[in-house]
Image (cartoon, rainbow, N blue to C red):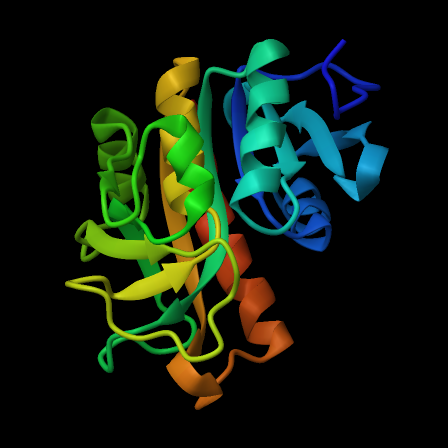
Length: 224
């Protein structure tokens, strides 16, 4: 039995990972036929069901921050998950990225300590699975080139541009590092929820629509 998750339904080999339990519910309703709740322990809502072509898919909340995401991924790997796509939110660091934009992660810089125990020092980079990222790019329909982002352990009050990073989040770098150790193929697609300094934020209805678009792309990347 895993240490944190308490599965009450099957766990698929393919999974979409989201931070917010509400996003897990939204995507389960959007993508799964007759979704079943597969976990509610610790408030980490997870769902199981059939999606494209009847293929099985898990949608699992990971909580907030890298440490929580890594622990959830470890449990999922123990339960048989082999491919994951993170669908999360980020803060735009580049002036040419606006709320609602989707960022396909091509490289994640570790700017926090949670990636350290996984062998990734501060300032070092982690790469997603190349083949899964290519399928994710294809599912987005073109025009989304892989981009560099930076991951902090805590939401920075005033995030600054970090090298060539277009955006900042709190999970991707440690999650990709853990996936590599666990033998899990992993990619990430981020939704710009706000610009640095809170100058502009995505309204909830627009965020939900972006979540549907990103979740659908993740589903196609995993199952086709």
